Image (cartoon, rainbow, N blue to C red; front, side, top):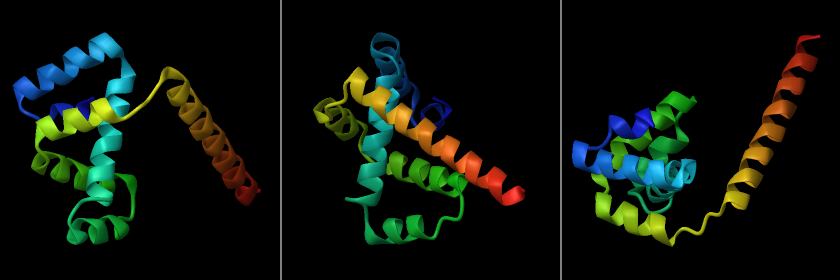
Length: 113
């Protein structure tokens, strides 16, 4: 939520918060997916090459914030509406992310032994 609160102006942010309070976390997830897709798939080649050079998650977040400011907010909202994402899809994505995180933690613990 803070990524978006420092990226958009107040009227746009209020619109996002309104959608968030009505629909829940799906709104933030869909918006993030659209921004990442627009950044990496449809963005200028300079942004894509910069994304490949990012060393950590904070570098990617900074790049996405910079790109999100350049994308028209109305376009983001229309693409969000077209993105089919159900509660089941979100639950499956969270489950897969948890499994990957657990596997990464176990691999790290095994390396330390």
